[in-house]
Image (cartoon, helix red, strand yellow):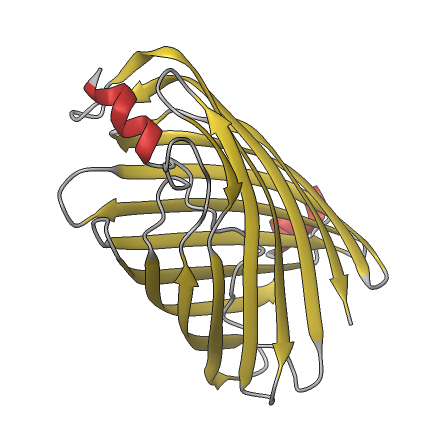
Length: 261
């Protein structure tokens, strides 16, 4: 019972992905818009000790959102994000607007291969409804600061020869989120990617976090393939929780459509 209630109030997946702020800011006048949809399902959840246990009823969380960024200058990027969320489990049935977030990324440092950026943003809480229940995992108003560092490099000879990748990159992000009405969070994300010519990119990402009240913890892994078609890109992937505490053991597909301007 305790696990099911907590699972109904906390989203296991941190919706942080390649559609989020990265270490590389947009150039002045350049923009990117990403529309993303995901469906996460769970029949088990992690209890307080981190052991998986059956939920009283299957849980499903759905989200469809838009992320946009625009280069105000070569070093400052404006970012906007919002989504629509819905879902249900044995105790909760919610549907409504998720948080709307606005923020700025500052390119603190960059050279031909690497970059470091700092992000600060504010999010207005979601409006999912079930007898006044708000969308899970979101405070009434949230503040976030984030540092991101990334580096690109040529693929090692063994990788290039066997798999055909010609370029690779790694990126790590660390965020602190202050949530109004909910425990604050620390989040960490790691992304590794490989480019196969100009048309294909393969991504492996890990999203983790922990709340300040020594409660929920989560770690999810997502693998995806991106097909580039000029200014458009189509991303398809799969995300799965691999560890946690007081969160659903959720898994499901992720689809995103990218457009660069």
